[in-house]
Image: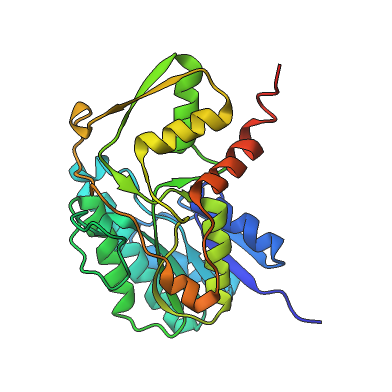
Length: 296
């Protein structure tokens, strides 16, 4: 009888990606241990020792790092905190993983790009982040890659929605229940991604024996207003979605105007072609909201 593989999921208890990973791994017969910021004080002087003790206790075959500082605008005024979570922690984790010989799957972001390209970004395209968040996430990627880990995946993803935590789609539906119309920006284009699909494709990539830098998103592209409009329509809400420019909602951090990600490397490695985001969005909304909002 084959022994079940063991996973340590950082962010698995409360994080959007981490919860999806835990669900998918358990369904795939992995033994899963979740840990997060409540378990480890990453700013403490003994953070490395605590992380080492966690890995020695869990003895994972693979560590999935889904913890990060994701408050994009707040990062502009708290670069130290963003650097700690997005660069220092991955570097520390990479060194500890290398000493113990287990695999590492680390999640990054489309914010490493400047949005000036007009076709989907590949993993080989030059990076040029526009924000503290993007710069610290890129620094985390670079710190891990510099360690030359033999069993390591860095996965960039984008525009996440899924169960277990508030996200753009859930916020839009909440707003639409409270008012008859909402405004959503139309001049940013990206790759909406269902976290359960991200988790499933990430596991398949790991199981393929691949290593290196990959992009994983659902197929297709959308403007934020298009994603919002589709979500409202699928939820059957009476709400008008108005398209407005980003300038109508000034933000501290600059966002890439175009950050669609190319997943052809994933397809080549695994044979998987990610399903279209509207199909994934339909599944998410019907799974999460149909029971809560039964038809009259």
